[in-house]
Length: 469
Image (cartoon, rainbow, N blue to C red; front, side, top):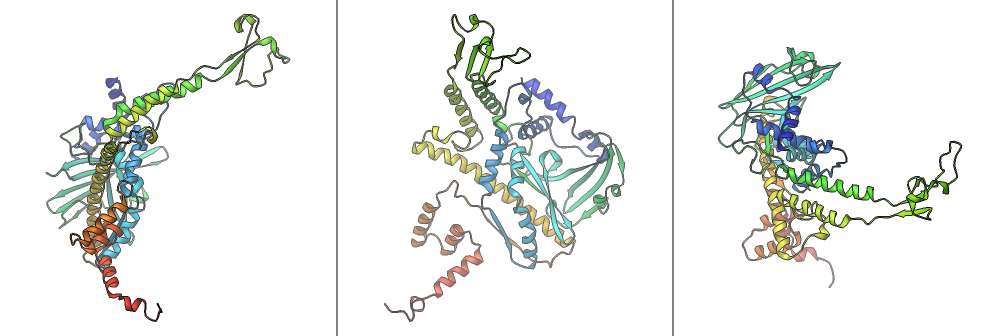
C-alpha cells in the first residue's frame, strides 16, 4: 500500500511546477528532498479531501485533516491581539499588521495543514500589503545555521486564454544585502514554465523590477512560519511538517471505519417484501407500491414464505461496536496530534479521572503554546520586513516600534484560578501590579502603568465626598 501511495503522490507532484525548470532558469538548487516533496503533496491533498483512499468506492471522508488544522489554529489565535506602539512609524506599522491579524486564523490553518507558510510583505501604494504563501507555493533554496530560510523562490501563476503565466520571484540574502530577481514565463500547460516573457505581459507585474538589491538589512524580507514539531519525514530538513503528519494511517482507518458505519445503516434499512400479486398494477403491468423505499416486490409466495404474502426485514444494527472502534481511533489521532481527548472524539466517552484530564490538557496546552511561540516569532520577522519596506518607500517617519502580543488561553487555562493565584502573588510581593494587569487584563506596559497610577490617585475621601453615611 505504501508503494502505491508513493506512486500516486509522484504523479500528482509531476503535475506541479517542475523543480528542474526552476533550477534551469534561475541557476539554483532547491533544498527539498523527494521525501519532503511527496509528503507535502500528500498533506495538501488530504486537506482538500483528495487522499488516495477516498477514490475507492463507498469510502467517505470525516474531513479530519481540515478539522485538526482548524482546531489547532482556532485555539492558537482565539482573541489573539498584537499592538505595535512607540512612535509615528509604530502607528503606521500597527495599521498594517492589523490587516494581517484579521485573517491570521484562516492562513495559520493552511500553515498547520502543510507544515508551514511564508508571509511576504510588499509596498502597495502608500501602505504595505502581504502575500500569504502556502508551503506548496514556494521553493526553499538556502538555510542558515538556525534553520531559517535565507534564500527562496516564490511562484505566482495566472491563467489567460488557455495560457499559463508564471512569475518566479527569487530572494537571496548575501551578508546584509538581499538580492531580488523576477522572471516571467508563459506555457500552454500548468506544470511547465515554458518560454520567458516580459514582466509587462501581465498588467499586475508591469511595475515590478527585474532585479533589485536591498542593502543594510539583518533578515530576509519575508517571514517563515514553521509548525513546531520535529520533522520525522526528513530529519535533516529544517522545514516543518503537517500537524497531522504522524496520523496519516490513523486518519485513513477512521475514514474506513466511518464508511463502515454509514454502510451499516444503509444496508440495514427496514424493508417489507411483498408478493407482487398483493398490489394493483399499472397499464404496463408493473405493481403500484405506496412507498418504493419501504416496499420490495417478490414474485411468488415461496420467496416470501409458505402461505405468506408479506415478510418484514428489520435486521439488528451493529452500530455500537463500530462506533466504539471509531472512538478508539479518534482518541489515538488526538494523542498523536497533540490534542486533548474529546477534541475529535465524543467527550462523553472519554475517561475523566483527574490525572487523565490533567495529562490530556497538558498535551493540548503544549501544542498550542509552542505554536503561539512560533507564530509570534514569525510576526516579529514580518514587522521587521514591514519596517524595511516603510524605509524604502518612505511611507512613514523613521522611529522605534515595540510589539505586545496577547494570546487568550481561556480554552486551556482556568482564568478565574489564574486571577486568584496572581492576586495572592501580588499580595505576597512576588508579582508586581503592572505584571498582574498585563497578564490578566491583556494590557501593554504603558496602559498598565497608567491604570495603576489612576487607581492610586483616587482617594476614598474624594470618591465619597459630599455623600452622607
